[in-house]
Length: 197
Length: 197
DNA sequence: CCAGATACGGAACAATGTTCCGTTTATCAA
DNA sequence: TTGATAAACGGAACATTGTTCCGTATCTGG
Image (cartoon, rainbow over the protein chains, first blue to last red):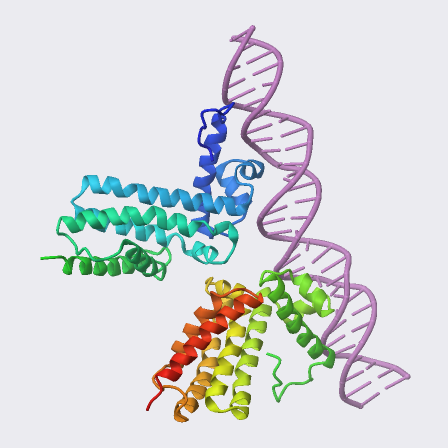
């Protein structure tokens, strides 16, 4: 989208880039607070821009939703390599799964939108899977090789299972997340228990 | 709601009753054509009444959706006894399951609304189950007693399984339903194959 | 047929997505 | 530095849709 193509005549203006970022950031915050049906004006105001600016960058309301979703998928997936670099394999895995839970927890309102059949969101499930599956597969493989966890669990299965876990947990209260984390730990222990040798 | 309570002072006016019925009928038609997000005016017009009339009977948009849903659940459930009376047990069961598939197929848009967390719809899943489960349980028990099908399948499990089958099928085209029916037949054969003795 | 209550229709209001265009601002070359 | 120009901006204006209100029409019992 905003990527520079070598042959392009003019570069995108700096303020435009700034605003696109501010909008995604504001949208994320507002969606979390009011849900995905939050008024567009609210988002524009929160980002400190007019609605015109918002619509130039995201012609449809759904484009904003898609934008926020992808950005958060990217952010979550990007943490895996960092965790892998700074922690032992088993620890990295468990930390990322917790991070993944947080991602899922903020997607309450989205879940129903995603499966609502609206073609605007049809690409998201694929985006979700193609970004998360390899990342988790890596963490799992590394941890398995280190003997920290079993090696017979498919990354996708785990993504789905934990996704269901976290999305049925409490909304945003401390308690809800605590419960989810307890269940997550249980599952991680399950991975450890069945480890080879 | 519209039920007569003995102590009530006045009976509901005849035209009011007529309109309530027309509205539910119109809403059903419009929802099927445009989905549950169809404009309220469209429904009022289709029913030949003003929006004021619509809102007097169904104060919230969601009340209309709930009304239509319940009415269709009732209609579908009510056919079971008739089928049981006019067909042999196995046949009655298979016919009703087909009828149930048709019910599910028209609920495409609703599915996501039901699970959207909107409290207006929170009572519907219960209504669904408490109406369909006993009805199907009867059909199953009778067919099992007659030796037409196996007797170790729980009504609720079957409702869910077929619900998933039918809701992933085609929308309204002939082909989509055909596919669903083939899958349904497969499942019914499964019930027959495992019958006792 | 009348009186009164009941119900009706649709204009008016409010909230929100989307478009349009006059104004402002970043960029670049002289 | 400065001025020309294209890019981007802001927010009023428009369109759609849920909801409310109230003057008018209709039904019902006597």
